[in-house]
Length: 222
Image 1 (cartoon, one colour):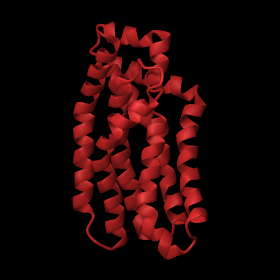
Image 2 (spheres, rainbow, N blue to C red; image 1 turned 180 degrees about the vertical axis):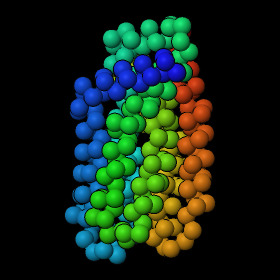
Image 3 (cartoon, rainbow, N blue to C red; image 1 turned 90 degrees about the vertical axis):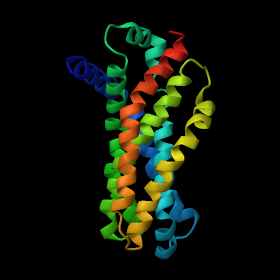
């Protein structure tokens, strides 16, 4: 736990000193959603129909935008090599990095989502479900994306390959994330779909850091 706290503090400090990495995903999320009423139609019935998919696709792309450089700075500075050869299990600092990354890039998306959902004419009773779905889904997106980022960290232009690797794995989270909002809009029970999202989060949170650590070792040749 001491090693985890130290690694988490370091990662939070490094990210905090790079405000662009925090602002860019949030700015992208807000701008993409803000453009849909202008591009399609400002009619409330039209916006509320497309809102679940728009919110989740924008969140997915915003998370992916922040993942390409997740390990690249550490790889260029030599920190990644030290991380892989340190006496501490690699999964400990990897978990700290993923948690710090989500706290400063994923959590802001969750916090701003009710405002954007209201702008897309979703009913006020659904705003809590929007936040909860993204609260359960964005950490899973971060972990899944980190696996692809770990496998492509040694490539000069790994962004396209990263998208090819992780987009198919994002599909279940996207389907259930948008589905729970759609179910809430229609007035149906959402507990079952939220439970599936929670199960996906538990699966990725438990196995994902191990896969990320293995991917880093494969990329570095260790």
